[in-house]
Image (cartoon, rainbow, N blue to C red; front, top):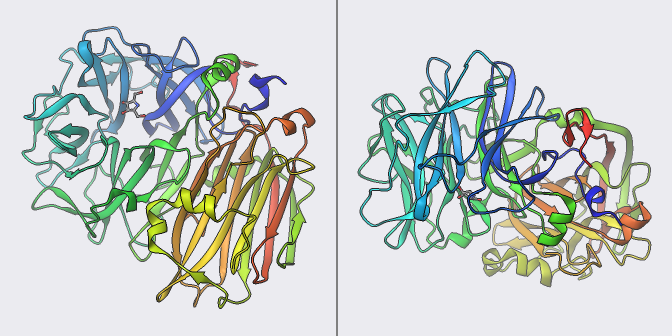
Length: 545
Ligand code: DQQ
């Protein structure tokens, strides 16, 4: 089979060719959405010294046109790479970008960029500031190779700009705080925005305000209303984790609502193959949008053969749940413009062992929304809190073929005729003291018969008040090698990468709703659509593959 075409996404963002990783400098400016990203202009691998900033633009967050890279390593303050950074729109409406430059000996510094022509809505050309680097790694105890990824700026209690930069100092990790009047000259605040010991370096920190139960976004460059909470996100280990708390204006510091020492227990933006996410305030629609990088789970030789590697997830609206405890995410409405061939089923009943085949849509490019309604909650098995430390392990132990009390139930997707290959997205319901804990898994262990793929079982837990609400929703976006799932209305999100081989040959896959728990599960509503191709893979009006 031809690897280059089979797995290329049809509506997840990727440029026409080559390697991409972190989204950088996202913004809405003069009617245009900008996606800057870590990009290797030369090949489909991440290579030391080559990393530049790619640039694509869109009017709808669905269809993207690639423009020229905006910066490449070409001066002493970024000669070994133009790494991740963020955009800020200053009070007069002028956009600026701060990014990490890698200078000789892996010394990481922060550099500033200005648009050459701010009246160009496409912001095609950028100038590196003459006084770069604007921030040097001169902090006692700082590891100068672990000092990177400046955030978008926000206004601090004294009216000055603030940014945070991920850093490792002595034996702890921090989001270091800097302030400035003009974005050009920066002073370090004598304490970090937040720090923690015993975890890997915090890459790509993101700091933003959210209102409980309100999915309107807040603009960090104006003052934040009372009652708002703050989220601090950091990319650490293999996952994007976050804490909810308040921005204490007196101490000029982030204070989490709950101190959890063991960072394995921190909530995650996504429990799957998703990293280095960044959010921005979308002034067009008054919402906060986030997206992340999903890396390939195949091998380097496949990436070289494909000529591309890395995608960005679908942009998601992000807001705070009404209990103020966790973030919710949902694909931006614009993605629904790709839906076609709608099919619907109502009032299905799934007894133990049932598999209901969903026909009528392109199972390689689909959007599926399904509600599962529990007929009884008595059969819920007891929850073991130690599972929270390693939900992937628990998903392996409690896979779709392991019968349970309530669940597993969910979707089997990308399934071959004889089930040699299939991917399962499913739930299980557990009883924990006064509440119920829902496990959501995206199990890739049988997703491909090809060796050398990374095929874990990803998982995450969320709480649900089943005394009030008996329905659990699942939305899954399938896009050839990408599977993005949103459970419980966006409480747990899991992005996965899959490379089915048999299916690729046959060009057809099965999709089922199933239940393998002893309690019957109803499906009051199931809708599915074929997803059309978005304009994401084309170069100069031609397909790049
Ligand atoms: N990727 C960038 C770094 C960042 C890392 C380099 C996270 O700036 O820390 O490509 O994926």
